[in-house]
Length: 345
View: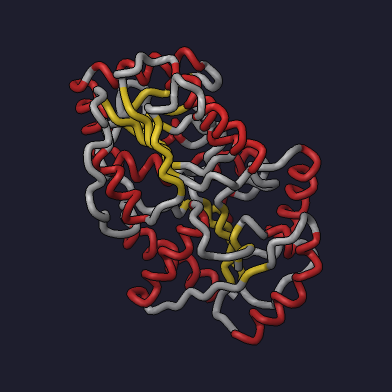
């Protein structure tokens, strides 16, 4: 059970689609039922329609994505339900009024769920601090491997510069795209080429600011905007880049960090969200205090100038990523949790 079109190219939607692809190998089938995307909190009025559709399908267990858990605050199907949480109560992209109300609704909805599956240890820590019973929580993270084989190699991403930097993230304010551009602009022109992958129009006002900054002379020829691309193309970009960078303030997991590390890339970002759980400063990447633009510039410069440092951090990143589960192992955990919930009565 999710919100809007399940084919969207963001972490939670990709997570569930990947598990749907793997379901037959685990003697399971994962089907999608969606609430329509309507202005908050109007989707509450859709609960009865969605519940009726679910009950007609008579599933063994219902998986409730955290993006729409609040929609079930006051009504829920009389079926075993499990929450798959990719964000904390209240979400991560909203202002205080909506976040506060949605957090309250989310917690009401959690009462209907037999167990809560969490995308990361950092999210589990947050929920334990908020008083949720530890025995209800289990971590089921995304797989470390990119969800399909790489596409054709994209060629030389450096484009005559010393290093290529890859950022994969939609243009939303919390992802820090503007912060990255400011830090990158402070590098000398030959230091590197920056490649931006992700949806550019999610937050139109923010996107206008990003486009305006990209149009300035100090960035105009040094940044390549790819927009949204297929998972295979993302995989190919990982294999061709020198460094992964995403200065995001709020990543409950940060699938792209884990994928980049598994491809042998050092990671650069703010010391925030789940990144400190995935990588250590000076070991698998360079982690900077949030908002320290000069520190971010210095980190990018070090990696642009020092191929040995890139190689050392990238090798360590790959070793650490290899300790995390593959998508096949994630599917085994996920469907095992669903069977346990269905049988718990």
